[in-house]
Amino acid sequence: MAASTVASLVESLEGSEDRLDCLEQLKTLLSSVPPAELRNIVPNISILPVFACLNTDDKAQQEVCCEVLDRLLTALSAGLILENLYEEFTRWLQDGSDHVQQLCLSQLVRVSQDTPDLLARSVDLLVGVAEQLGNESQQIARTATTVLVNLGSTAAGLEAVYSGPVFERLQNVMSKSDTVRYRVFQMAVELSIASPEALEVSHRSGILVKLVNEIHKDDILLQLNCLELLVDLAQSNHGLTYLDQQGIVKKLEEMMATADSSPFGAYLLPGLLKFFGGLARFHPKEVLNHFQVFVGMVFAAVGGEGDASIRGLAIDTIGFIATTPEGKAALNKQGNMMTECVKNLGGIIRNSPSEMRVRALEAVASLIKLQVSDQTEELQQITESWFTRLCTNPFDVIWSIAKQPFTDLRTAALKVLLSLAYLPWGQQLMNNAAGFKEYLLDRAIESTKEGKEAKFEVVKALAESPTVTQIFGNPYYVQLRDFCREGPFFIRAQAEVAFEEET
Image 1: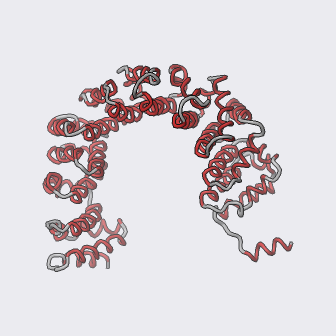
Image 2: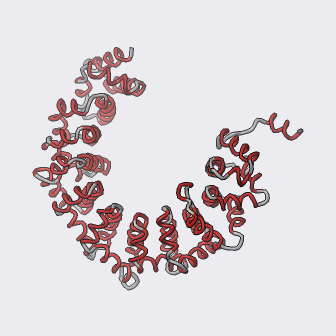
Image 3: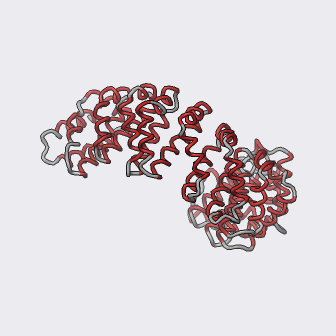
């Protein structure tokens, strides 16, 4: 039924006086046909009448036509698209409208994923893709970047990107503007992250060298843009090694050390903190042991030195580093500095503007969170020690914030309770707190979607914990399990409530 209707609508386009209406009908129909069924229909009909609808100055018709074609072409194999539409795609990338160019690139994303080596041999088409990195449309440029990055997943694809006419076109578009140059840099970084081999090819091309040299320029905007890309590159082990070999990591630490005396230091400091924070997330032991300027600056900022934006970023950085067991262990090795940091976080939670309190609560949630598989005796002791040092009666403080009528603070405090729910010592605190077990199962307390979902996660974590019956007892475990079965938004019927009250 669907096959004949699709074929009929496509055929009707040829003689239609209102092609836009016909295309709208076809678009609606195609959206209701399952992909598997569409894959059986499209190869058996001619879609040339749909392509003919692109030959118009009516932008509305072009847009709907491209949406219809995208749906139809997705039902064809990547190989068939490349074989049958090579010339059209090459031409449309060069002189098509934005809608048509986006259609081509969206399909080429799939081709680059499914048959990258086949696409690597389509040089003229790839030159057109490379040209689109200079497109004024951010969406088109981003999609073109995705095609080239996917292509670089194979050795043949990497060679196609970094040699011959395609690479020449990339070098040409880089000269258009700083924005376009950084798009090419971003493409090179995304390719380089994939593997050491890809990074080596990117380096030999000279593009990565140009990128790292940007950090030595005096232009603050260029340095900031460069920092963002270097953060991404440094998240891979081979990327970090490369930056270290190029002297970039040392250069960035020097920039951080002189930020106070530099006229633009205040603008660069957030980016520098993010760079080293990103490094510390993936290489906590190495960073916290070797980059003392960064370590000292983060702890000092949490303690109140510098402006509020840097303090907030430093708080986030502590939480970011602590997301892994290795990060927690590395932070604990900082001794008294970490102890003071925890106390400062406790002070921020009690006596700071709301936004800063939320960030501190989320950092604490990260500091003490340990999945069951990571709960070694040492890490349990570390996390319990940190929580205890936050302030006097830290559990009562967190619980009281979780009951305040401010959604952002409530949900942040519930994140801390969630982290506690994973831990045996955290469960002991919950079990010993008068009224907490009743609070946890009382659905009437939370009125917002965010609050209901956050509280449900706490209950779910307890219900799934291997120590829940040992600490809370089996009857309470049954209640937790029932709560989870009912879901976060369960509303008990009035008659049931009245019956329970009578009994």
